[in-house]
Image 1 (tube, rainbow over the protein chains, first blue to last red):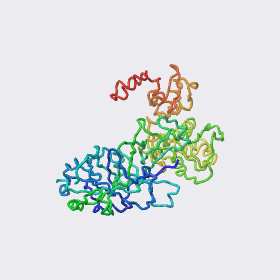
Image 2: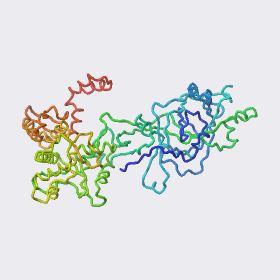
Image 3: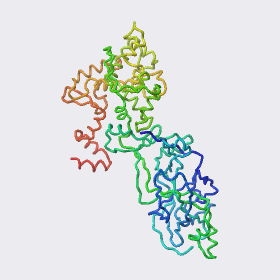
Image 4: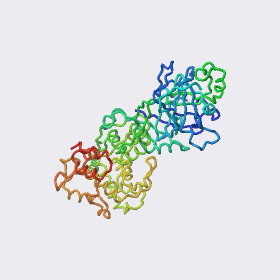
Amino acid sequence: MPSIPLHPRSDRGTQNGAADPAHNPLPQLLQTPSGLALLELQGTINVPTSETESDDIHGSLAQPATYETPIGKLMFPDYSVHNPDDSQWMKRVYLYIGRYQRMTGEVKKLPRPIAVLRKRCDNEIESAGSEELEVVEIVRYKVFFKNRPEPVNDV
Amino acid sequence: MATQASQSILFTNTQPQQGFRLLELTPELEELLSSKDAPRLQIKSPSLALARAVLDPSALEYVNLCTPTRTYRIRQVQSSNSLHILQPSLGRISKEDIKVVGGSDGANEESLNLVDGTVAAIAKCGSTLELHTPQDGFSAVPFLEKSLALFDRRVGDGDRDLDVDMLGDESGDADATVLRERVFADVPVSSGQCEAGWMEICAFADERRRHCWRPSARMRLGIWKRVVEGATLQGIDLNKQFLVRDLWKSVLDDDDDDESEDDGVNALFPRALFEAVVRRVSVVEERPPLSAELKWASLDKIECARWVGETYLAATAPTPTAAIGRSEFINAWRDCLPEAWREEVALSKLPVGSYQNPDPTTIYYVEPSQRLQASKGSASAPAAAATVKSTRNWHELLKNPKRR
């Protein structure tokens, strides 16, 4: 069996070009060079149109028309850009699902950092036979919602 | 309200989702991957034939992650929680859509405008990949032993037939490095461990036959004897640094004085094999990597004596039925070493578990693969009990009573 190379993270950023920190609305602690961040929650987010489960690495790379469905809002109520050293804000994060449900969570340091891997796809010619993986990002924090949503009034 | 004033980020979900895997890193791997010139890693699994040949009860199908020097077994861990991968999005979302999550009345329109940006969930992972290192670690030796053909012939017989079960394929490059890499590709451990295993068993690449071999114990012992003879004749002190070329010459001179030098001994054994043996017994810290030429060497007296004893036993008494007399073995072992090293000979110097005594006067060799089983099996139950007593590991403490 051929061995599959796993390339270390390169400085190219992601293809979507969203790595620009100016566009990253997350608190600085959660920002990574590629812009990727992790959010963990109990259960799943059910999106009406989701018929494809892209859990596997062979997921869609062709990227047809992608569209975004708004789910809710993410809030870091105690975070202040002016006081980035204070880590108290990490204790409280809200995720609104729609308008009337809210989950309360926190920002947690991962016990072990997680590398985000994906199939490398920059040279199409080669990809026919050989598979190559690359580390897109190393993530050290996650936004974690361990509680179930609670009903709230409209914000 | 306090929350009203704080940042609120629009959270969306993209369709279709992208394919990602999450890999939990060990501290060493994190350091390695975060470094400026991070090396390329490899995900290796054994070829099907090799996986079957090397009995590994722990896992029939597995995938290993290899850094240049280390190996980790990858295990997929499912989680009931879902991990979403977020990415900042430029948020090209119509106002109509945002209304679903934001306010719709005039008063709340304000808060809607407070949206500071958008993050999109671009992938969902229901599992992560975790890395494990088995207690025994990883070794390339069992895989190399199965994938390399045995090189065996009675040294000195002039018998030119090779006892081979396979002939090299004629196609392709004959460069030793290329030959070796081809073998390593199927061995599911890091290249550093592949090299270590390769040196351990004195494997060598035969550029002329375009094939890689592992010499039999008899072969290795034969070469070692020639080395000692040659070194003694030429006055080379193996304990000090010497030119490997000189030693090779002394080995040649010893036997084939009048014949054309290279051919005479080359037919007996290739130089690559000679170098593999010298490399095996030379001081570990001074060993050059396999890709570099072995120019200078000095031998490690203790390690070398141990290796010679083990090899001698493997060559002469490989099975319980072939057991030899213990004193006979000690004497022969002593004879295989240079004069000055003979005090290194003692049964206690042999590797643990490498021999068995069927009765008080005889001894035979135990293959490394058998050693592991023996130490795990019931034969060494008293020893196991002893280790349990000294260990504080509760796994061990709980495991043992069940066995009895």
